[in-house]
Length: 108
Image 1: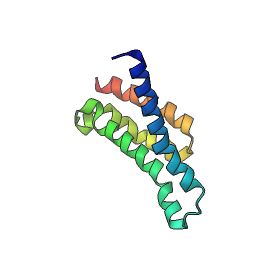
Image 2: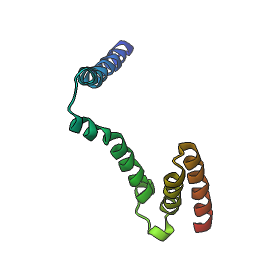
Image 3: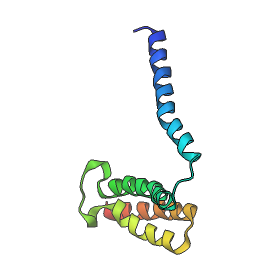
């Protein structure tokens, strides 16, 4: 394959990706959506983040671990409590890293 063909495919895929993602957002953002639809849409980011985090916490590296042997799960519980108490993303992130390092050292 020539370099020109590869670049044409990359540019074509970028354009298709942009069109498929941007155009619906641009159209919907100009509409006045009903309140229940807006409320429903507001849960999408939280749901996606929860799905990503829970998958990695329960199955690190794609393997199931016993709850008492899983440092990710053991660290996630107090990290969630820190976020619930203070609602600070940076502080929660730092606490999560520290909790994980502590539980990994204890469970090793």
